[in-house]
Image (cartoon, rainbow, N blue to C red; front, side, top):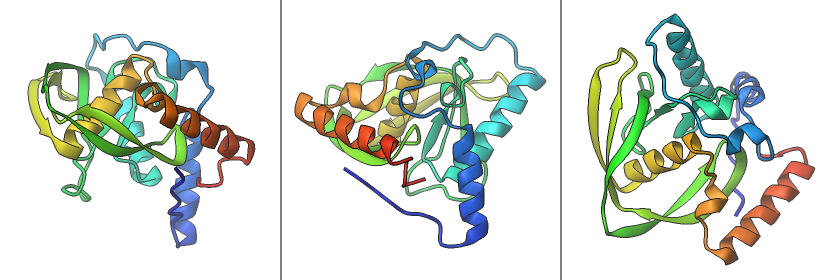
Length: 190
């Protein structure tokens, strides 16, 4: 259940540590709260998106939701796994899953709010998401495979749902034990 890939270069490590100081970790009640819709596409939203992009880049995550930074609004940033390493992370404002495939598959997922720990999560293999971009333009995203997994994981954060909530009882017990051990040890994977 543990995963560890600390950046080798001291500057990257310092940036990663700074990014993780922004992220709310397991046990913070804000992670269990529901986020409210964004109503204004203004400088405040632009600043939040800049901050989300900075944190996801330096923490080297696949996705990040505003509640993970303690901001209870419906905004996520993400990268399509195995496709995007350059350029800014994609932004979804007020996203909602409008189509879920009946087909399900298991993905190995981690979470920046529970760093260094991964688990198998069964999710819909394909989803369609309606959202706005950072400028308020409507978007429809059809996602499959790991892309669908990342979107489902990040949208869960907007409703206070965490990765352990999606696990089988057996995997949940093991995962929560690993999370508690990591938290007591000071989150060594950061």
